[in-house]
Length: 292
Image 1 (tube, one colour):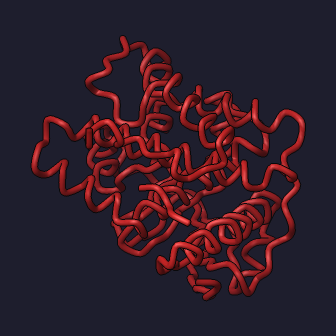
Image 2 (cartoon, rainbow, N blue to C red):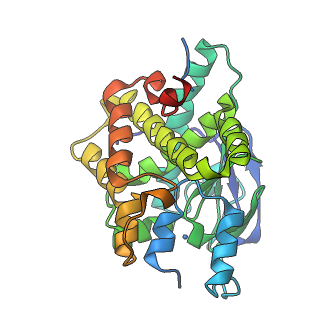
């Protein structure tokens, strides 16, 4: 996508690379309601709970691995977002997401707070616990942060076969979708329902993830004039490659729908496409049939 350069005053960025940390404050109709094997990297990406991942890593013997030296960080949004091309690109995406979603909340008279983008290298700390590169990007509702080790993009390209800028944009847009769910109270309602009926926990998790996929598509649709040839195909391919069924097959396992937490490839592509085609956040109600 041809996104504008970020305004350092309009993005919330925290940088944990290099051991330092800082935070730069920025902006703040109806809106619808992770050496780790590739399967772990893929299956836990996009909306993972850090505490759950740490338990998995420890069980696999990965909890005590030695981390490499942290990449250079920055002490301002300008320097952090310009550490490398992927950092710059990520900040551009964050800025575009802010500009897209803030007005929708304003129109609906719903309070809006922009999330922060937290860069880290190998390991970091979030309001939800430790951050590890093996988790993949994730959103922490406790501090409203999108946590990203940009090295994950290399894993996407080389191990998951998810290539292209729009595939990377989709990563951040999906996590931003979880922020939208937090602001609307949807994620809290889902967590409560999961606690009340653990047997439905996976199904509800899938619906939450698919809604975040749809919200990512809505963002793209509302910036349709920025979309370039091949972008949509790149995003849909990424959605396909991170479907639970594809990841299970890649790990040598037979897909088991009962254990899905993020949705099948077909489902993820369907809801991303639904957001792109409709451009309407109200079309992203993945919980509608439960209320009938």
